[in-house]
Length: 328
Image 1: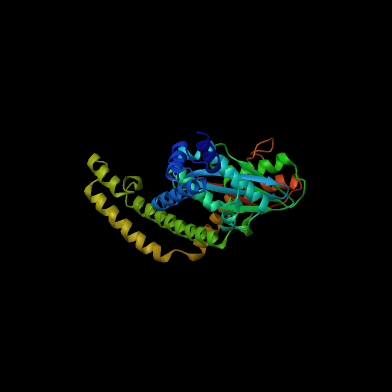
Image 2 (image 1 turned 90 degrees about the vertical axis):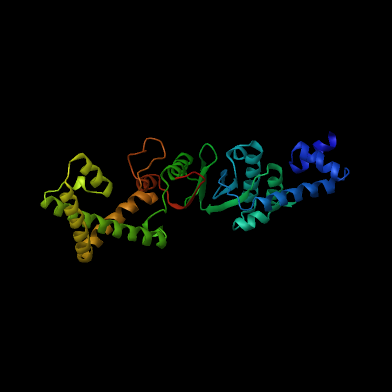
């Protein structure tokens, strides 16, 4: 039992795994450790095509540096296990100390003489679940802070230009980011790919709405209630109820087909662009940090924008990261 306990302490493997490894290795500790490691590799290879959808997200800050990472696994049962959370925390501690540039660099760092990537493989052998270091990133500034939402599935890190920023305020901003999920600090920081995609969606939505308005006008002129013919299911249902006749249904289908074809080809481009621009302005207001209503708690919550809060506290937010395993 003493030997089993020693091997368990050294590897973190289960009691029966340690017992079996020692038996197979004829009580040679080095061989037993290698057996446990190879078991992890075998399980990892076997489960490589499985989805690691659960996990643990943790973050930390020290002075002007903050880091966040996600260690993923397959089930919520493992994700909530104290050993798994402690293992994630140990990886985060290494990240905070070494400040690696990216996930690959972090995975190559060592804990107790072993690379983090190797330790993850060993853990796979222990739990029988696929695990992966899914995400790591950091922010730097004069002051940095973090917020971990209860449950370890969502965390944020934020950096401010100023040193020694007021804790309550910067933590409130970190909590706000967790709750409101902004895509960037301000409009200029929104990635061009997101801008292009949102503009395309705004233009298409505007065109559809303008055409549907014309269809509605044409149906009303023909004496047909647009609500009765807004879909094929409604047309069939309302005919069965006697609310519209077969002739009205046929006329409605003809009007919709004709008007959609005509109006889609003749929509005024300037009008479409103006409406789409308005939609984009609304998008920036709702999804950029400084334009959002502040929801980080305290007396200012819901009353002022984040921009106003930062100005009031003489703070400048220069970077943030938000990581979540939740479905949103």
